[in-house]
Amino acid sequence: MVMTDTKQKVNDAKAPQINLSPAVTTVFADSVVSINVVNGVARVVLGAIGPNNSITPTGQLMLPIGQFGNLAKIFNSAVTDLAAKMRDAQQQEEKPAATN
Image (cartoon, rainbow, N blue to C red; front, side, top):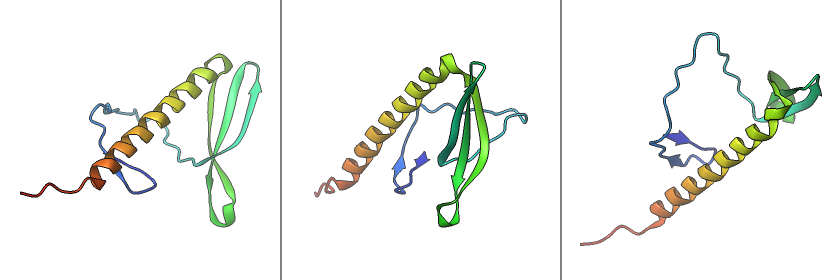
């Protein structure tokens, strides 16, 4: 089950359970501070929006520039799928209950 910013519940039975190794760092980000490319590597500095809309860097994602477009497509697809699931969930909630 995924909780969205709008507090709607979206069921995602297909979501795989991922066991992260202890070496994997989890980073919260709700903004991008900067994107730079050096020597064929894209460096995306992620950030969190704090008080007074100030942004604090929280981590850096590094990937080969050749994979940047692929990652963007994956994120775009995920956003499209989640939006459809949210619409479906909202429509189910809005249907009047059947009366006997």
